[in-house]
Image (cartoon, rainbow, N blue to C red; front, top):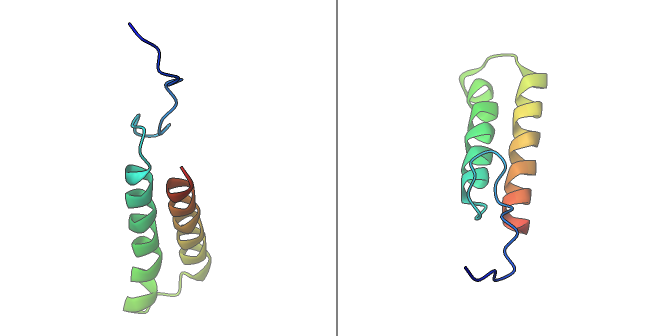
Length: 64
């Protein structure tokens, strides 16, 4: 079997080589961060954490 330089590293969470699942998870976390703000709940810290981690996951997925 030919080794074409692929070291088998992919998405740690989903086991795929593209960043698409991580980007999708990031978008989902951003939505979970914004929905409480839209419906009027006072969950500022949780919304900031979800949105920040979602943006981080999108950045990781794009930078691959």
